[in-house]
Image (tube, rainbow, N blue to C red; front, side, top):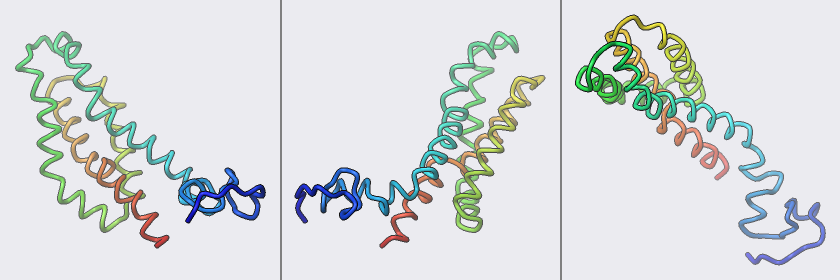
Length: 161
């Protein structure tokens, strides 16, 4: 395989006009990227919501939650721990769900659960309710987290082999 330049991109199927090589495999009309770009964008957005909501937003909100519920660091620090604990406990059942129902279904369900739980977050009357919401985050993360995204993405390439 060489990267020889060709004038006709219709003959090669590559927008770059390359006859063979990595560039033609990346951007040709039958390439993995051109076939699955919509799915890739949807998966990225779903994971962005999942990771942002479960990992990045809660630590930023902890000082405001301490003021809101009149507690100290110790009283608020167990909320992220609940997420990690529930996520760890439900890792195997989450993997079983991904295997049984498929990645696409689990990613949709997990993202929807996280969005609904996030909508309920401001209405939590106590820290116990926030702990329940963080537990829901942990459970839903196993459905729409990094493992499901990786399995979904790599399954494209398995089918094309």
